[in-house]
Amino acid sequence: MKKIIFSFLLLAIYFSLFSQSEEIWDLHFQIDVTTPSGFASPGGVETDGEYFYVSNSFDNQIAKFDLNGIWIENFTIPNIPFGLNDLTTDGEYFYGGSGSTNTIFQIDFSSQSIVGGIISPISVDAIAYDPNEDAFWVTNWQADVLMLIDRNGVLLNQLVFTDDAKGLTHDSYSAGEPVLWTYTGVYTGGDGIVTQYQLPGFFPTGLSHNVTEDFPDTHAGGLFCSSEIVPGIVILGGIAKGTTSYLFGYEIDVTGYAPGPPTDFTLTADPAGALEVLVSWVNPAIDVNGNPLTDLDEMRLFRDDELIYTDTAPVIGEPASYNDVSVSGSGYSEYLLAAINSYGSSLVSGTIWVGPDVPDSVSNFYGEQIAPNSPEIILTWDNPTQGLHGGPFVDPILGYSLEDNSGTVYELLGSMEQFILNVTIPGTYYFMITPYNAIGVGGTATSNDIIVEFTGVDHNLILKAKYQLSNYPNPFNPAVAGAGRSPSTTIKFSIDPCMHQGRQNQQNELIELIIYNLKGQKVKTLDVSGSCRIIAEATESLHHVTWDGTDENNQPVSSGIYFYKLDMDGKVVASRKCLLLK
Image (tube, rainbow, N blue to C red; front, side, top):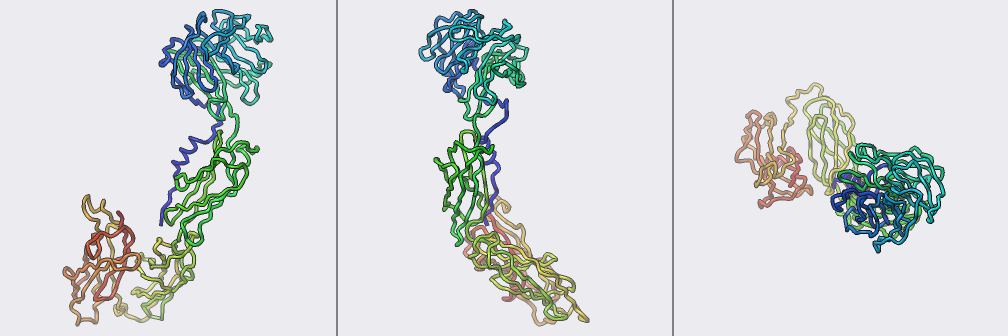
């Protein structure tokens, strides 16, 4: 029987790649911009959705990074009198101020040149483009005002703002937008804090974060906001200025939601026992918040940690299916179905038995003493007609493992529905029986309590042989036997001499141990007659013989369940089961 252990590691990896985060202030990236750029004082930062651009506060250089944080180049913008402390963009051009003049420079980064300018009422350190007003919010860390000016430099709004800001950005993506974010704290050792304000009234929303706690020994630099850096995530990013300056990106909201889980997920194994499963489902129609789903990129189906099917063009809300015909063998299979879009994923899973099944437990398992004072118990049962795990029961029963309440085990070969055994001690007995077939071990059933009584009978006259039969190790394998040696197990047995009472004419009896496979085929005979003959009057003794896991031709046998039977002069008197592993 195949043993399936569902991989929680797979789920952990899968969720880390595809599940949607909704934790504000999750730090999505931090990039050392000082080392690759060589800038003494990185200042402003902005993105066009393809690259990050970082300005140097001390000169007119710009450093270009890809979205993975890989530095690409530094380039120079001529005619900027000093460095740019903050950057913003209207989607076509970039804008910034040097803090030393009142000019807002309009810059084409493609041509790496100034293409225009706006005269501000104050010198500009921090700047943010407001697309709702087609205007610019500006301030500097020495002023106590925050101004909104249009493209002609006309003052549209002026607010009291006493914090020392080095970065501003307009947020058109988060819930409750439009909002303006500020980044304050101009000296190392102070706190670099980002704070959100509601527009147009510039009221604090209560949402803020201390960046310096994440980047010690830094203070405020430029600021930006984008929904194009991480799919489905609104990123608030900026420069934490220090001896080593970092470009950071925090999650502050999401722009969409992961799909809800698929519905009507059904697994149907082939009823005739073929190794195939029909997997059917309905693609999700809503997102994880219960709203109509508008984006569904893929459906991925896994079996036992392996990706077996991908639908790259799923239709929202439509039924779908996949017939899996590549199951390797009988046993449980675990299926996991993932619905994926750019915002995350949702999963459903299920387990099913595939292929021929092991036997179910027997029914109507009943035992009784055959007659008063008889040492014989008869056990009867009805064999199962179905598989233990709901799969097709098509492989016949090869035998049973029968155990009594004292722990004595009897191995019964072949299919049967009754068994008679002897007991020597009166008392209450019950039995547990487990059928097996070529697929594996089936279910276990327990009999009724059986009362055995011997009235007026000398127990010593009840001729019952007591045999002890066992092997060690069990299971056995090469690691147990020793490196470079064949697998072996030692079979031990003893015989109660009382079995010879009334048989004085028998001096010796031939003893053999015979190995059988799960199909009842003889594998090897272990002849122990040379080292062990039982004398009629001898005391009870323990004997042993070793099986090295080979057949009659001394060829190694395969891994699996084997039976060893104790044979005395051609009569089987005891049988046990062992497991060989390689």
